[in-house]
Amino acid sequence: MDLDLLALSRLQFALTIMFHYLFPPLTIGLGGLMASLEYMFLRTKDPEYEMAAKFWTRIFAVNFAMGVATGIVMEFQFGTNWATYSRFVGDVFGSALAAEGIFAFFLESGFLAVVVFGWDRVKPRTHFFSTCMVAMGAVFSSIWIVVANSWQQTPAGFNLVNNNGVMRAEITDFWAMVFNPSSVPRLAHVLIGCYILAAFFVMSISAYYLLRNRHVNFARKSFTSALVLGTVMSLLALVQGDMQSRKLRTTQPAKLAAMEAHFNTGTNGSPLYLFGFPDENEGRVKYGIAIPRLLSFMVHGNFDTPVDGLDKIPRENWPPVATTFHSFHIMVGLGMLFIAMTLAASFYRWRGTLWDKRWLLWAFVLAIPLPYIANQIGWVTAEVGRQPWIVYGLLRTKDALSKSVTAEQTLASIILFGIIYALLFAVWLYVLNDKIHHGPDPVHPPGEPPSGSLADLAGLRAGVGGASLTMPGDSTSTEKPH
Image (cartoon, rainbow, N blue to C red; front, side):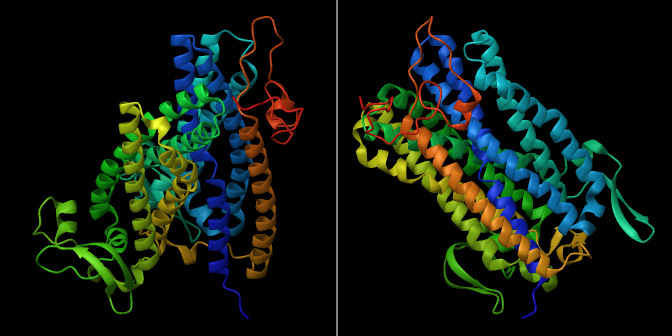
C-alpha cells in the first residue's frame, strides 16, 4: 500500500499541535484567575483567597511544564516536515517567534519561580506583581503565536522575493505584518476561549469539592470568581465570534462559505443552516434545517443581500466543506451551552441558592471536557477552512512539504509521538488528579516553616505545599472531609 506523505505530514502536525494546545489555553486563563484571587487576598486579607491562589498556582505550574515540553516538538517540525514552507515564511515567523521568546516566554518563566516558591520569601505585593507578570507573559506569548498564524490567513506587510528560484516572503512593514487584517479579531477570540476554559476548569473542580463537602469556603470563592469570568467571556464569545465571521466575508470568503455550507449564492438572501450534512459532490446540504435569509442578515445587516457561495470560488480552492461546517457548528453549539450554564449559575448565585442546586453543580463537574473540545474544534475550523492553502493565496499545502522526508519516516514518527504523548498525558492526569484529591493546603500560621520546594512542584512529596501520594481515606493523608 502506497503511503500518502502529504496526508501523513498533516496528520502528524495535527497530532502534535492539538496535543500541545491542551495546555496553553488553561495556562493563559489560570494566570488571570490567579491574579484576581491574589488581588482579593491583598484587598480583604481573607486567608481563603490566599489558599485558593496557592492551589491554582500549583495547577498552573504543572500545566505550564507540560506546555513547554510539548511545544518544542511543534517548532522543530517546521524544519523537518515542512522545509519548503519554512523557507517561504522564515522571515515572517522568525521575527514573530523571536518576539514571543524574548518578550513573552522569558517574562512568564522568569517570574514563575517567584510565584511558585516565593509565597513566604517576598513581600505580598511583590508576589502579586510577579503573578501579574506571569499572567501577562502568558497573554504576550499567545499574541505572537496568533500573529504568526494570522499572517498565514491574511498575509500583509511583505514582498515576494525570488532567491535562486526559491520564493520567499520578506517583511517590508513589521507592524503591517503584526496587525494583519485577521490578527486582532483572532487574538480576541483565542483569549476568550482560553478564559472560558480556565473558568470551567476551576468551576468543575470547585463543584466537585462542594458536592463532596470538602474545602467548602475555598470552593465557593473559587467557583464564584470563575463564574464571573466564565459568564462574561461566554457572552463576549458570542458577540466577538459574530464580528469575526463578518470579517471573513472580505478576507476569506471560501472559509465563510464552507463554515455555513453555503454552496449557491442565490438572489434573494442566503439561509443559515442550523443542522445538516453537506454533500460537496451534489452541492447541497442533506437533511438540513435552515432559517431563510438569516445568513444575509448576520453578514450584511439586511435580509436581501445574498452572501457569496462556493459557486463563486474555483472548485480547486474549496476547503473540505463537511469538516469545516461540522467543526464550526459544534463550536457554536458548545458556546451557546456555556452561555446557558453560566447564566443559570449566575442567576442562582444571585438568588443565594446555587450551592443547593446539586444537579447544576454536577453539570459543571461533567462539563470539563467541553471547553477543551470547543478550543480544539475552533482551531480545526480555522485551519481546515484555510485549505488548500498553507499561506492563504500564496502557497498551497501540498507544495510546502520537505523534499527529503519519506512517508515511511513520517509514519514511524507519528507512532513514536503517539506513544510518548500517551505516556505524558497519563502522567499529567495522574499528577493533576493527585493534586485535586489532595486539595488546597491550609495557610500556615506565622512562625511555621514556609512551604514550596521543587519536590512539591513535581508532586513528589506529601504534606504542606505538595501533593499527597496517599489514597483518600489513608491514615497518613493530610486531608479529611469537612
